Image (cartoon, rainbow, N blue to C red; front, side):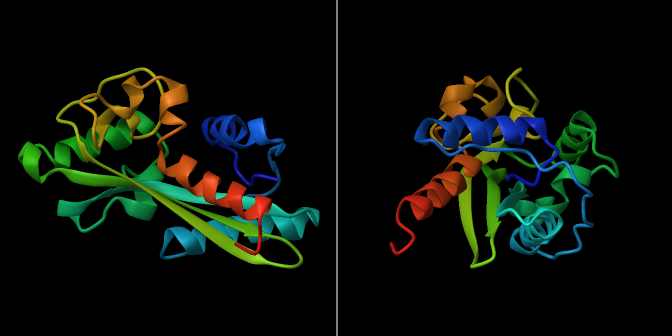
Length: 188
């Protein structure tokens, strides 16, 4: 069970895990407060809450964009960077804060940590997708900061990548692939 109310994240997880027969159902129970100080702590809070509420093994992610020149911010506060949960407002604020930073100093990474909780175990998986911030937003695919993130090796934003391409490269893909490998061979 995926402890998320985010339909975009749910779709990505289904696209990545579905082809190997891992069915991803969404948890729609009460959302705990994310009081952690790291992606891992927040992912564990959400996965534990879903497991405790349902008794079914659960996983949750916490993810965000980390800008090097900003000391890793917005980081765990990415979803509420502007004080609310509006993607465009969050992006616009980040771009405004970075407006005087030269293109060569705009290194950033998307980070995703997934925590899996069951009766027997608690384990985590982390993916880091390096790149840099664009000067302006562009693209219609994806969500969150995708329109302002240019992945390493590309000249277009993550929101301009076809979903199949993004889902084969992203931070969430990396973390989910680690989880998928764990389920295939927990002793590895």
